Amino acid sequence: MSESTGKLQQKDYTPEVDALLPQATALAEAGKLQEALDKLFVLEKQARNGSDLKSTTRLVKTIVELEYDARDYAQLNSSINALSKKHGQLKGAIQAMVELAMLWLDDIKQRDGVEKWLELVETLRTVTEGKLFLETPRARVTLSLAHHHEALYRNPKPKSSPPRDSLITASELLSDLQVETYSSMERVEKTKFILEQMRLLQEVARLKDTEGTDGGKGEKGPLGGGEPEWVKFRVQSRKVNVQFLKEPENESVKLQFYDMMVLYGLRHHAYLDVAKYYHKVWETPSIKEDVNGKGKTALEHIIYYVALSPHDNEQSDMMHRLFADPALEKLEVQYNLIKSFTTDELMRWPGIVDVFGPFLRETEVFANDKHWEDLHTRVIEHNVRVIAKYYTRITLARLTTLLDLTPQQAEDTLCRLVVAGTVWARIDRPTGIVNFRNKRGAEDVMNDWSSDMQKLLGLVEKTWMGVNAAQAAQSRIKA
Image (tube, rainbow, N blue to C red; front, side, top):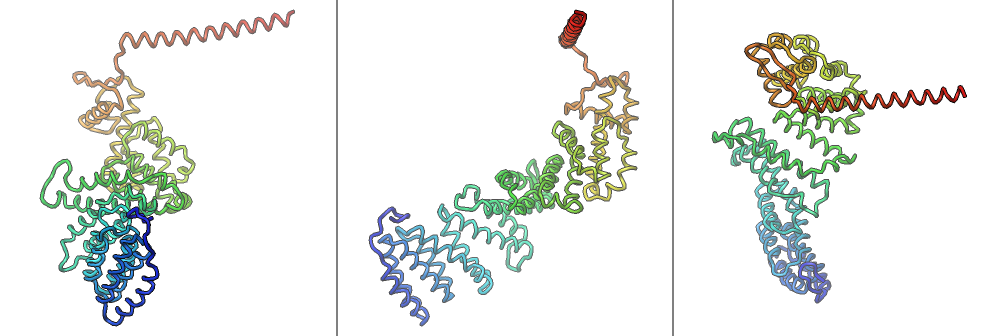
């Protein structure tokens, strides 16, 4: 039964095909290509109507092969289009024809030029459009076309589109394909395809960010510049199966994925996410084993970006787990930096600059002035949390001295942490006093008193039982 029409094969045309193919090949070699094609098309129709998949496939492949050998690309493109649209054409025959034509793309591009290559590519994209059984070949052809447009972006030709448009075209070509739904594509190829989509989206986003406008037309807004592409990038990244990346054979794919995610996180100043991405890289066996190379670099970046992250439960947990990791002890500067953040002691910024500044400012991370300013902010926030832990009330003047800030800067920092819910504080402006303890209601006081009484009664009962046990033991000894 034919998998295309659901009909039983009516006749086996193998003898007729075996007899015709040598004749057609001889005619084509003698320069009578059209005569050979006419004979092949007649028998192809008979085999197709008879649902003979094997014979139909042999015939359509011979037709396009003869045209390719004759370098008649106009006839080749026409035949591919015509054969794919024939009434009752078998899916297997179309698929075999398309896959055969795809094998010639590289040779055509090198021997006959880009124009002929583009014509065949567009023909294949037209033939494969909307056909589920050809979704994987279409994706592969589209990927080649996208790489062609990306090459024009990097090396523009005199008659090509502007480089910016070429890059956007390459990205849009790949983004139109939802490869995550393709059941016929292997998992590794599917993941690599998604990574290519992400890479091109990232290229376009960074290009638009550099321009500072959306499309170069001065349109600004909440999604101005490259933000729409960054949003698409994030959506694409969620299509990658993280568990699949953990398999040893997918190590290169995993590293490529997290390298792009690091750039995404840095663009949005999501330092904790960046630290997590570097942690995933560091967990890779080949990276972790390189203790003096890539492994050391990855661990250093984890420390730096955890320190740059705003304080919350997740950040605190990750920092303490890193501090307890034996691998950190080999990095003296980074170990002392994390130790300062995990100890409930004040970190005076001038001292931090003197101790850590000369080393950290030479690193790739803190050579960036924005990152250095953010580190200063995290040190101030740490100091506010320490002060809130040890003080119930403190004068604003004393607070500014401990934080090494101006009164206005200290007040702004305190207000920001109060709004974020990191600390509880109230400023009494007339008296210049900061209160770090909330007034407790009668219900809270009674709840605490009740809890304390229960603990006290529990201790009394435990003591009483101990005394009784001791008395019983003594009475047995005397008896």
